[in-house]
Length: 313
Picture 1 (tube, rainbow, N blue to C red):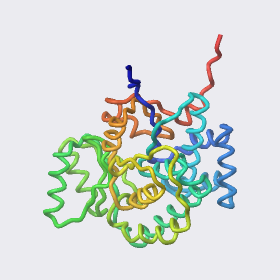
Picture 2: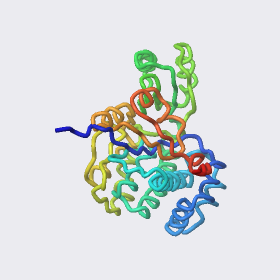
Picture 3: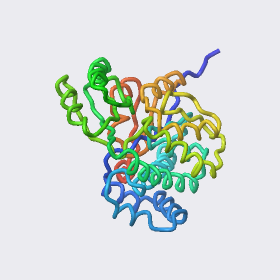
């Protein structure tokens, strides 16, 4: 008796990077799925999301985050029509976790829009009040043993830090006090590392524990989380989530626990996933070696969705 061992596809919603308003704006205005979801988001928010997004300053503003949610979900719906994508499992890294919650059906679109707006606002207010001296720095070309040596030096100085994200064997993000940021970047460069961009407010750090508790009481307590229609792989540890309560906990833990993309990929391999459809603007998660080495990567981004379809002779 033969067994079908063909690999399954998964859909992944990436974390946000520095904002590309022009590319996203064109997609929001032209793609019919995006236009519909944008109108639905306006209804929930009570204002024009596009106008607020255009006027906002900063990469991770409340309006940029909701626009990112709309874009990722629109691309997922478009890819289902365009490629017939029927993923067996989904995941979302960092900001993408909110998208995965909506895509999987754990949250309605309306609740996901409202939640994303309120969580972003809560983070901005809390960080501006309690974490003004913290920043999350990303960096590449820094293997884990090298990073450990630099962090040991930081500990010897009595300094606080948190590992906020592990993207690949040599790509991580660390949260630390901003007055130690230049020293940290210099030490990384001395070991051949490549500091990239800092994130403000900080992300995925124990320093946000009070905010996690506050958002649980003030935002998520009023939402109904259904069991997802397909499993969601948690971005913190690769756990396979099949209940609404698990998805809710994943979103809350996103404030305080680090993202570990290699753990997500290890779970995909165990689940016989062979293709990753990266649904959303992505300059990172679908490009690192730990992803490209073991999976076929299919970018589903605004540029791909706006590209004219070739005529069939």
